[in-house]
Image (tube, rainbow, N blue to C red; front, side):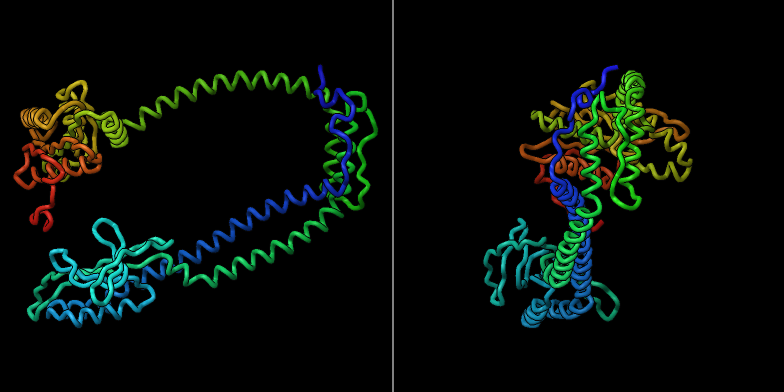
Length: 459
């Protein structure tokens, strides 16, 4: 049996280097690990302190509602702009507040002070004279809390008259815990310096010499010296390095016969690895298919629909989306139980699967909702398909519950429109179906047609 190359030549480990260099290298490695752990723990301490301060900041902002809502409500109800301006100016002096704005019931800003955010996400600084100037962003993360303003008359009737919003920034939390962070950093630095000297003294005096003996012994081992006297550590006491020397001596005695055993083991491992890789590949394919399939209906699940939607929009071209919902499905579960409800879902899924076209992608969006992606189909074609699906469901008797109906919302992707907006428009069209009596098809004719109506907003 051939020996490793390192044992076939004398001095295979190279000429011995100075003991001081070996001990120093070991010290740097151990201390490096300590520094990594210390930095991680210090970062965790800083993060905990920051999160606690951030939570206190959030609580302080939330507590402003109890303090200032009554005054703001009274000033808005009495149309007293001066009082309202005074309240906002007082709130601006609170450290947790970087800006305050008040809006009426129509969402129009009537008073503001400090740094506020406009509808497009830009930052503006508003002074006491309502002069607005662009504001630069801080290194923190802005956040805000909005509170409704509701007037209650003497008869107990409530009148929404607007809302007020407090703007703040996470950088305030950092300022609040700055001294704590300084203490943590100084403490970590002092501990690191002290441990560096401890590691240097202990490793150089107690570990460096025994390691030098082991290094020199290994440098002399080759195929002709495996029968040489065993390694004996000269350092006093008994520790892990003496156990290491004993293990090296045992290894020397077993080295030759272990070569053959290792070779046989490697052959077995290669065979087992090849078999295992085949099984893993097969199982991976099964899991990938399962991860994209709804277990109840066998249709594509939401994850698959999201992927297909992203792929279809990335390819360009016309894309329509149909979102369907079984009408009054909750009554099926309430009356017949969830087992029958599952059978109804499976039956409806089968009806839709048989009715869609080969190029369409059908899946279960969630609960009793189904989605059909129609690549290369305009709004007229998708609406026609949705109507055929509606008629087919209505005309088919389902298990235990006779016939049911479905409502469908249809939308076509507009240029530059996101997939989230497309799904939202189809969902809005489906909502109109529910509001207009169910068992119908409603189409969305573009992003601008989907503004929330007062009736839906009230719901």
